[in-house]
Length: 126
Image (cartoon, rainbow, N blue to C red; front, side, top):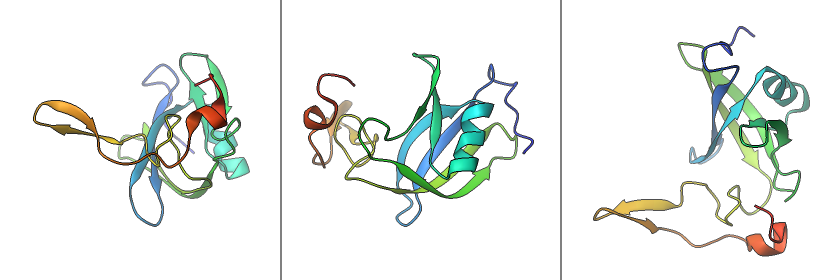
């Protein structure tokens, strides 16, 4: 699995896409360990740049991402992970996708309804 983790300080970009609809759900980062855990377990695992630790998507919410397919780009420094999302949403703000805002007349506007209440899932921790 010759991905280029050295190029960006040990991390690669991971674009997460719904395997049925093609919608981009989120973008995260993986170090080599997170990528290997993703491959070994079949659940998307990331590296948190702010906490400097691995995190399994859904460990708090239960909204896990089941890996269906992994592809890489031509430079081997990014992956596209097609997933089945378990739960009503991927975004910690309560939306199906982290890409719920649209640029409209120069302003970012929420363009869809929340799919779950983040307060009831995470409490005050997001």
